[in-house]
Every structure is written in structure tokens, then in C-alpha cells.
Amino acid sequence: MSDAAMSFSQLMKLGRTQAGEQVSEQSRQSLPVPVPAREDRPLRIAFMYCPSQALPGVNRLAPPSQVVWLDPKSGALIAVRAVTPQSFGRQDPPREVLGEFRLPPGMTADQYLALRERLFQLYDLLFPVWVQPSSQQDKVLLQASAREFLQIFGQISEPPLIPYYHSLGRVYFDWVRALAR
Image 1 (cartoon, one colour):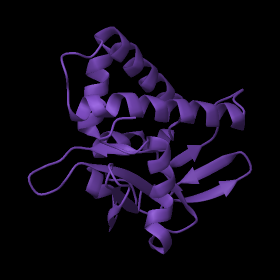
Image 2 (cartoon, helix red, strand yellow):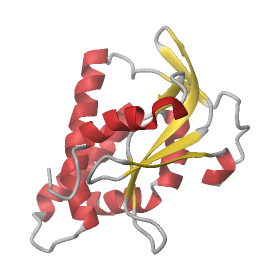
Image 3 (cartoon, helix red, strand yellow):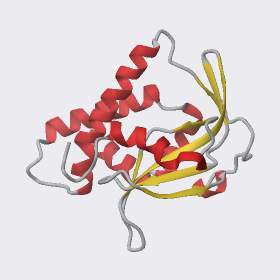
Image 4 (cartoon, helix red, strand yellow):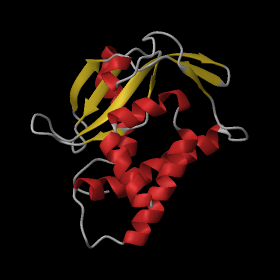
């Protein structure tokens, strides 16, 4: 991993621990979402937290109610913010079930965890290039990695949250999709 950021596997763990008691244990933590710096804020890694109801083999998800922002270099908590669907340009009822998340047919929990760890490795590879593009990068390797990232993200992310991921991380996901072409 680059000196610029902690590993995404570490950031995923810190997303929950850094938010501490500010985020309900009943909330599902999203996958990491890189968010670019602006004049008024630094580069950040965001995690959405969604009220959820865990049942055997399925997790019913409501829209995100909080976003946790971490510093990618230190893992330090930047902020915890309450959000509504409107924060993401959505009109979903705030506390109603959006849909369900379950493992894809035929996928075991161990396979899911292995794919999630591979996704974090791909974040670790792609994120530094997104932050600081270099003409020295191997375009073929990056294209293959971007394609693999999108494929795995599509397999293991929560389908009801896809529009929320794309709203919050539009710049990053657009970059990955363009790189994959």
C-alpha cells in the first residue's frame, strides 16, 4: 500500500471502531467510498450506515442514516453526520426497507469474505493512482484491476445501496469505470 493511505482493510475496521457509540450496532456498514478533496474539505473515506434487520441469510436495509468520514492516511475520525435519502438526491422513505442484501446464489460466507478482501486489495492498488495519477502506471494492469474491482464490487455490494454508493462516490466510481474501458 502507498504511504499516502492506510490499507482499505484497516480503514474498513476503523470505520466501525472510530464511530464508536455514535453509530448503532444494528446498522450495516457499507463498503468504503473514496471522496475527493475540495477547497473546504480534505480527501476522505466515507462509510454509510444503514438501519438493518438481520434475519437468517438476509439483511433488510433502510436508506443510510449516517455517514462516517475517515482520514485515509491516519484512519482518524473526521466526522459522523446524520443523512437522509435527500442527502444523496433520492426520494426513498427514510426509515422504510429499501430492499434486501444476501449472498449471491451459491456463494459461501468464506467466498464472500475472500472476495471482500480482494476488493480491498484492489482499492489499495487503485486509490493512490486516483489520488495522484501518474503517466508511469501500467495502463493494462490498471485497466484489468479496474475491471476486476467493478466485477467484485457488483457481486458483494448491497443492491439496494447502489444508487447511494454512486451518489456519494460519483467521482471515484466514474474514474474506475472510465479506467476499465
